[in-house]
Length: 359
Image: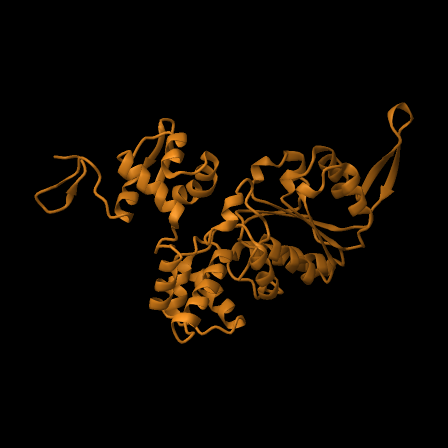
């Protein structure tokens, strides 16, 4: 049961979707109460947990601060949670800020100069930090020192400022945008993977217990299967199903109750919502599966080009329902199957099976 306060970059509409991975205020309030407090409670990300446990235990044995940690991965997978666990495991306070909030080197200098020895600084969306602040961070991470510039022009003076040892935990949804000099200064780098359904079932069971919601194994599996591999979405779907169960049933969540509730919210068995299905239906029904240009597809579904490209397409591509090609967007055979449609030009062969080649 792990979450992350990171918002989707350039994905504002995602916060309004039930299956969007950006955290709204309700998500943040619930996540604060349900977050695991140590690595033992953290579900999933087995390799990352094992590696991070070794890093933290070794640092504690040496009586030193932990190495700087870089966590990358999609929103909602647990980067913020892990940063808080790192601070808890090291018995240190944590300071939380974000890359977009640091627009000047002076902003970063003010934060760094106020850190206590051993404190954990969590820097969310670190790839969006300004370049001057980024260059100051190099020296702070490596030498625990920054040069504060006083004055301007020829009379400017650099005053060295010693910093207490600290641990920087950087989180990013786009690791490729980090410059190599910054990546190289992290002692431990981990990539957060999407969760398997079995792991999400454990997430749902734990969340339901903490929320005092009755749920059986099949109900948890139904919610987990529609959560797009993301704990935050699983937690959000659980709350909506809980509401439905309290109003329409006796409050307990079963497979039938979960399926009925998520049908009301237009989240299908594969985790697609209204926007996802609108994109696929336009691609299949209006353009015979493609290829079709992104702008044309966006007009067909009545959405902005950026919304289709940044909100709907990533999941459809990851699920193997849509492909991006040089000629445009193309539906895969799985998309036709998922919507129960027959590809044009297909026929039924003598064995009763669809013949996609028309022979």
